[in-house]
Amino acid sequence: MAVCAEAVALGRAVTDVGETGIETIVAVRHPEPAETDQAIVVVSPCGSCRELIWDYDRNARVIVPSANGPVVAGIGELLPNKYSRERTL
Image (cartoon, rainbow, N blue to C red; front, side, top):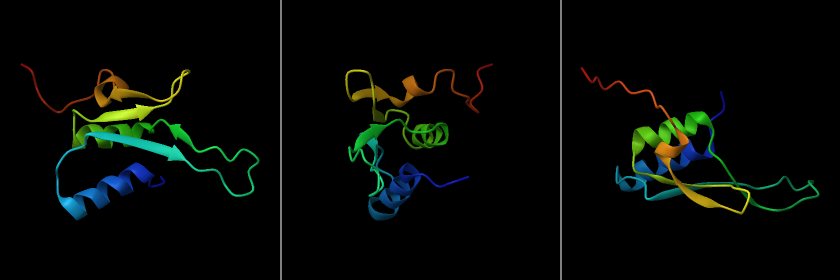
């Protein structure tokens, strides 16, 4: 399994400033130098990164791509029916 940029960014943030939560996070794709299309684009976080963001801050906002350009979504919207260890008896 690869380590994504979101995990590195969150780890660095915690190391540098402590656990302060996430207001908004975004991932972008930078093309390789040899690629014809050199556009830098917003990409959606993978499932593992969504879990990591949720575990770190359930109120985090995530900028994700949409048909009309980037939009802001709550991390909970990106993880419907999220597994939780919390019990409701």
